[in-house]
Image 1 (cartoon, chains in turn brown, purple, cyan):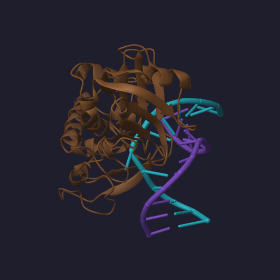
Image 2 (image 1 turned 60 degrees about the vertical axis):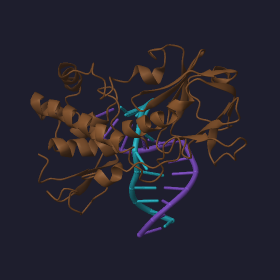
Image 3 (image 1 turned 135 degrees about the horizontal axis):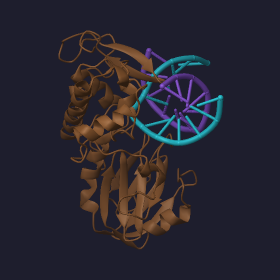
Amino acid sequence: MPELPEVESIRRSLVFLQGRPLRSARLSKLAPVEKVSRNKVIQTLSDTTLHSIQRRGKYLLLATSRGAIVVHLGMTGRLSYLAEPASQAAAHTHLELSFSDGTALHYVDARRFGTLSFTARENGDDNPFLQKLGLDYDDPKLSEEFYLEQCRRHPGLSLKALALHQGVAAGLGNIYACEALYAAGLDPRRTVKRTKDERLVLFLAKAREVLGLGIAKGGSSLRDYLDGLGNRGVMREFLQVYDREGMSTLDGRGRVRRIVQNARSTWFCPQIQK
DNA sequence: GCGATCCTGGCC
DNA sequence: GGCCAGGATCGC
């Protein structure tokens, strides 16, 4: 579900929890814990303090003095703050963090496409998921030159597949990939090797723009997404092509078509995107 | 590089 | 009942 703007909006909605004392952590039977023991997850988050909440790509890191739990929200994952002590847990709650003051933070994921894993290190290079991530789109260290280098390692990919590749650069998902390709005027079916440097660099700039707007609008609430306090984002009202098959682009410059690439829908405007 | 696969739920 | 969904890993 959530892409960089949604995950960043969740992070921002929860920064007030930094420094709050943690009492205990509980996992559900079906909790999607990967590459680490359930005990490690619980120990990391019990009888300590939640030092920080950070984001890397679409991952959130819940850090304590013992390391960090790395949360991926998959398609339907949510982090939800409960201000009322002893609140009822929602269906599909897989991790319950209880703070000493009786408040709680729950990780909820119906489809369980998300993951909970662990890192002991600040940079996350001991975590198999974070290891594979490229630099964030919003990372100033992601220069045009470095981005081009990454692109050229995947000449056979379509631009849509390139956009979704988290190792090239991290943070785009289906919504913002479609939107950034539209903004850059690029046909999602075009391959990397048939795309000039200047057009790839334009895509990078547009991706940054679109993601920035997504953050400013609090993310796109389509079906499931809510931030950590249960608030919706309004980015949906600004999407030019996503989920607009048969309609005009939001700005009225052309008609939107839907195709399927790598088993995922792509919405684009053939008149604008070449 | 691509398709199948992991899951649940909502909508037609 | 079938199709679709803000994702990513895994095998060919």
